[in-house]
Length: 184
Image 1 (cartoon, rainbow, N blue to C red):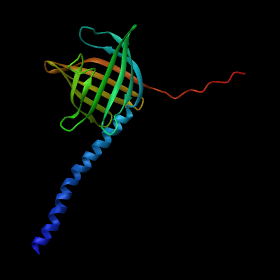
Image 2: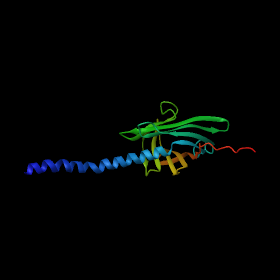
Image 3: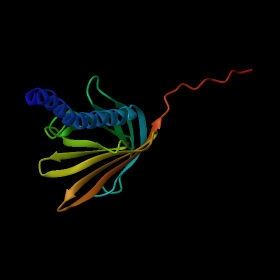
Image 4: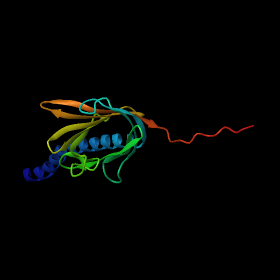
């Protein structure tokens, strides 16, 4: 009798122990998916280099935000313009089982960009990615103030302090066609 009770109770206890973890990961995945879907669309806005050799340089960026099929993640792809010069810019991340999210900024550390080595969505309104290139360590953060406003900040570690280097304030661009007014 005792053995029969244990054979029924133990699997139920094991299932109950796994339930909160499964629910938490499902909630986390839904929160992450909602965040990434909220960046879909076209974004534009000014930015500035706020530290370093090019401090004070102002630029304007245009990005298209997309999400991959059947994966959690995002891509911001476009470019930033300083005067008549335009520099292609992109950041792509996808979910990684070990470190949250991984990807590249520009063409990654093998090229002239940075590797995104880990990251996570925080509170459904902000994502923070750890970035690396050789000895450079830092973070890239995207925060949604509301559904049409996003701030992207890149900070680097100088000794024991994180120093903001680049800031960009983006607004969602309405891509809905505006009807024309008929002439009389």
